[in-house]
Amino acid sequence: MSKLLSAIGILKQTFDEYAGTDGDKTTLSKKEIAAMLKKELPGAGGDKKEEVDEFFKMLDEDGDGVVNFNEYIIFVATLALLLTGGKV
Image 1 (cartoon, rainbow, N blue to C red):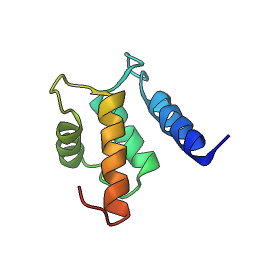
Image 2 (image 1 turned 30 degrees about the horizontal axis):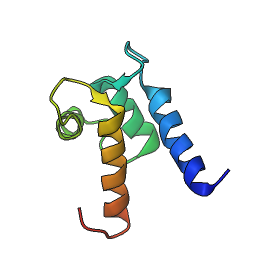
Image 3 (image 1 turned 180 degrees about the horizontal axis):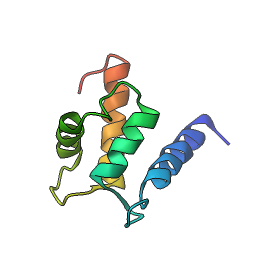
C-alpha cells in the first residue's frame, strides 16, 4: 500500500476509534474530541474545558453540535499546514 493510502487509512481509523463512544459512530462529540486531543495531541488542551469548548466550536463549522468526518479532515489538513509552515 502507498504511503498516502496508509495515511488516509490512519486518519479514518483514528476518527472511527473516537467516534461513537457515546452514540453516533459518524460524528465526534465534544467529549470524544477531548479524549482524542488528550491521547493523540498531548499538550493541545484536551484536559481544559474552556480550551476544548473553543476548539470544538472552531471544528464544528456547521454548528450542529458534532464534528463530522469532513470537518475532522479539514482540521487535519489545517494542522498539517500549520506544522509544516504553510499558510492557512
